[in-house]
View (cartoon, rainbow, N blue to C red):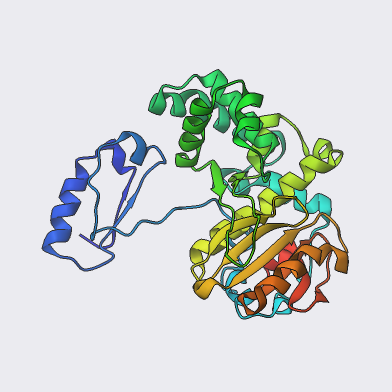
Length: 346
């Protein structure tokens, strides 16, 4: 048999894992088997742990670097880890704000991003959500689909936000225990990502509340049944969609980065300083990001990044204000204004 052998949807015949285990025990050469399955595979199928025999990879949605076929270029996190944010050069062509919104609402699901447009795309996303929330999730957990759907809508309205648990579960009309179970289920289904707060002994009075994102910005529009024109008229929702879109780019890039970063957010308890996303590199070094809908951010837009740099010193490697305009330029020491599109056209 020619190798590597791909076993897709292995959970349909879970006993095949026993055969793979025996084959690997007899011949441990790496890369002989590729095992792929749906997100339900780990949640409702009997498995063997595979410790020492399997390397696990999470397949994130397609990001713009993959969709634009720019994967031969350098990983943007690895570029910034060298300490020069200006190394993320401005792309030759960059979308404007409505263009970025179109990319966000197209999303990273392969069928949608590569094949569908307009109302066909909207119907696919709405159907995906309905199937997941009323069938898949219920089959796995037995949860009430109406309440789970309402909870998901609350998360969609607050994606990229730092919202207290009590606010979320009260808005959804459920208790704290149920909300925690719902969140765990949706994280396991890879439609919600919980980004922890970054804590350090160099800074005091930091909030510990995590930041919740839908993993794909297109799901915000599908859940709330809104289109691009509606989002453009709602500044708060527009900011959340843009932040969610950028986070999806970083989620995939972090998984592929040589720096092996972890993603965090940061906010102090009085709300005076907030960093949208922070990547922690080895040696406690950080690269920090602000996301702005502005096409021409000013030095004042880098205020929070400058505050963090001054307190961390050499541990602050670089900062970038990611914006919707076409130009890259210096805002402050080790901080630059960088078009969002530079993340996939570096």
